[in-house]
Image 1 (tube, rainbow, N blue to C red):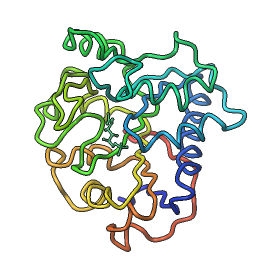
Image 2: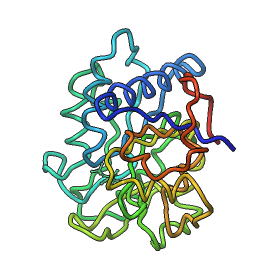
Image 3: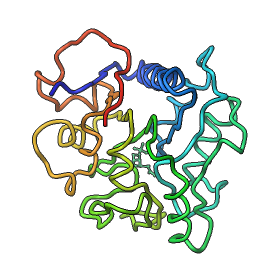
Image 4: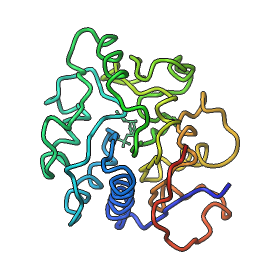
Length: 245
Ligand code: 6PG
């Protein structure tokens, strides 16, 4: 199956990511009158979110924002995924608190937080934004994690390999049921993880980003640098496709 790869010069990465996200949001609003959007954390999305906030004529009133994962920190902590999204996007567009559904990583009872969040998530996300770690993790689904075997719960508590260690993450059923997945990856240090996620037949338990294999991958040339010529062959830019699942 052809992968949907949008490979751009690093200088165009933020604009390309914003264009794909704006298109996917518009598609959901047109089809269903609302968009259940789950954001990725980390640092890669930051310039993309800033650019998305500047997109004209994007109708935010029907957009509900969720998160793919969150660290066990307060929402104003520099490590908070919510804080990153709030500063780069949410405080720049008309999304009131009632349509911001953050994971309350600051609470002691993280298992309770994960259970509540799993129940609060929509049956299917319209747009799920994901990043990729150098080890192939996505959201906070790390290689070898028991969370990768989860089939019931839609969010769970995990321990990551680096601080902040404790996190809440969505589980594979939530990734698989998302209508559109948009993966953002930039930099040569991601090239191996992108290769393992997009090509070949690596087990998602070893490379959780494979769960997003059929999504739209927005890559700069460095992150795409290990992909085969077949994967990278030029295709005319196309608008975001319909659902992935
Ligand atoms: C997180 C993210 C995580 C991130 C990758 C890539 O909480 O850290 O959800 O999955 O997307 O670790 O992070 P960078 O974008 O910082 O490289």
